[in-house]
Length: 219
Ligand SMILES: Nc1ncnc2c1ncn2[C@@H]1O[C@H](COP(=O)(O)OP(=O)(O)OP(=O)(O)O)[C@@H](O)[C@H]1O
Ligand SMILES: [Mg+2]
Image (cartoon, rainbow, N blue to C red; front, side, top):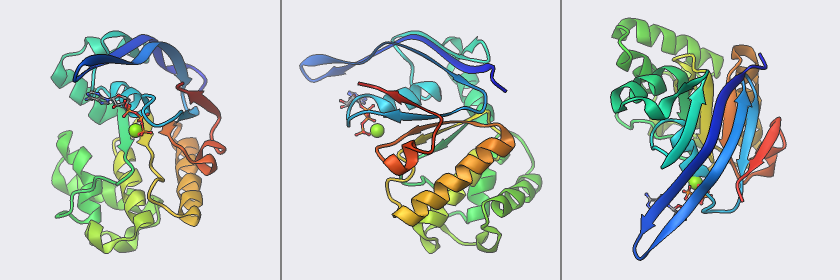
């Protein structure tokens, strides 16, 4: 605990838009410790999703370093970045992004299966993780048979199955009511503590940001 897990140095990101260039991130530097829980705040359009995608290796900065445990993921080729992501990072979106044709347990097992484990073992581990998020009884349900709060719990289960060192979340509670927001935060904070997972959560919700260790405001 308390070592730097993530260390970003002078990240720059500019988008080409129709008739102008839009600089979204300008010489942004910050670090995140192992197990630390951070909120990413700032007005709509300030670059929260852009930063999360760069941290996940889903997008590249124009310049700057994105170091995980001292290794700069910007320097990896596309395949190695995808492998890095599968192994080290969980991602949770506002609208769960679960696969509609697959059951809850299959959705949770998928990242493990994709990383090379047998289907049988992947499903076995997925069952244990669904138990952790209190959804064992719903393992056979498809996403459209689950409530919004349940879907987000399946999305959390999927994000932790590969035992990531960090989970990045983009407005994960944007579609939940107050009670489900509180349940969601209780669950992710417990998991973060038990498994020493860092959290980086982009949010507009004070009921989310007030529960985190530190806020990074991207104005
Ligand atoms: N692929 C792209 N091409 C051009 N411009 C983009 C692209 N992606 C994002 N932008 C622009 O970059 C800015 C930052 O977008 P981003 O999605 O990171 O904001 P955000 O802070 O997540 O906003 P919100 O709170 O609304 O989700 C916006 O002005 C957006 O229009
Ligand atoms: Mg966004």
